[in-house]
Image (cartoon, rainbow, N blue to C red):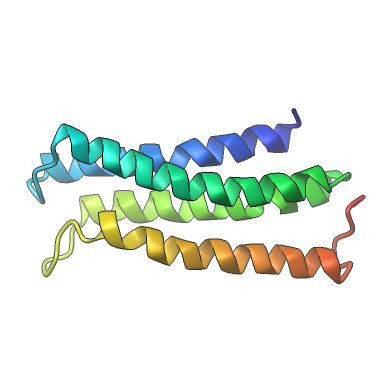
Length: 135
């Protein structure tokens, strides 16, 4: 397994762990009261979402031969996981006054946009030859 493949797997785990950690922080701050099954739901929801994104990145990684193209292949996974983790933690520390806790259900649909846009950008860069598969 390449170094980028390990980062792809790390990205799959990063977002669900960040969601559970943010849930624990939100519970400690008194934003909402999470139960044990709530943490399992948060982990599962984000894990399945990131698994789908990582599968697309994994396919791109299979077709990449150079170091630059491998990093480009795992960019959708790492970008989505990073944005989601920061968003969850930020929203747990500084909850919204109107609907605290909304991000635990609302964020995956926004992260779907981040993942789709980053996948399209990567595919365009690969198909147009901006970054070749041997770069």
